Image 1 (cartoon, rainbow, N blue to C red):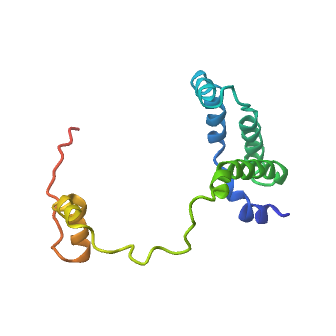
Image 2: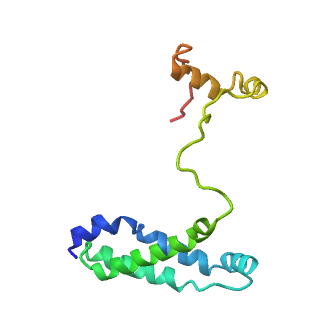
Length: 145
């Protein structure tokens, strides 16, 4: 695969390299280890973040021509995404929608309409619909130079 083709097809999923380093440092920190112990009952392996950081640097330093290093990072990202979405795909309790409900934009109940009266969002909504004139913001801030 050519570097340009790889960049278009898979390279978009490579994060900036400093993020992999930050993830590794967070994973190996005392706070991170405490969190892992609290959630998982044990420390987790953080080496993949370090490998991703090193491969990202190789890919970046080669100006995107080291496709091997880029592929290693994208495969790791894909595996991480698959683990994160595993419970979503395994969910058989909730029926997944293919379209919004028929009455998704029906009128709000009266009590909620009253609660929403004269809020910033309500006024902005009316302004955008053209129901009221544009609200002028006459707020001035003092800058001390």
